Image 1 (cartoon, helix red, strand yellow):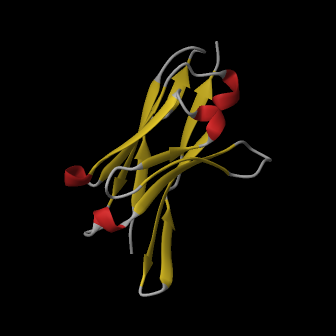
Image 2: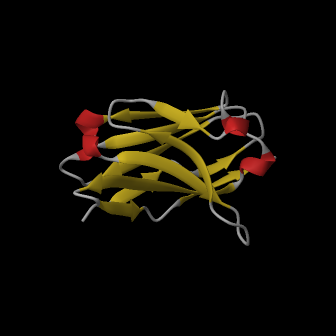
Length: 119
């Protein structure tokens, strides 16, 4: 069982920056892909970014260049740096860990952290 705890959400003005953190309890953290998703109330959860154990990254096209995902395997943590924030970035942001082990997918969600972009 893996526990994911997000932090770093809050209120920020348009154009500002925020860094979210996701701390994982996994003992073999590097075997997990870690992803960030976000969800606006009443809408489907949408994928934001992915990072694998080696640090390779991928982003939703519209967020590439503004958001940056990174990980510190020594601290079992993943980060999402968000720059030039827009009102439409307001959402609950979730951390998600997934791996394929012996043909079985293991995945876990964090509880989410609220980001509000407003003046």
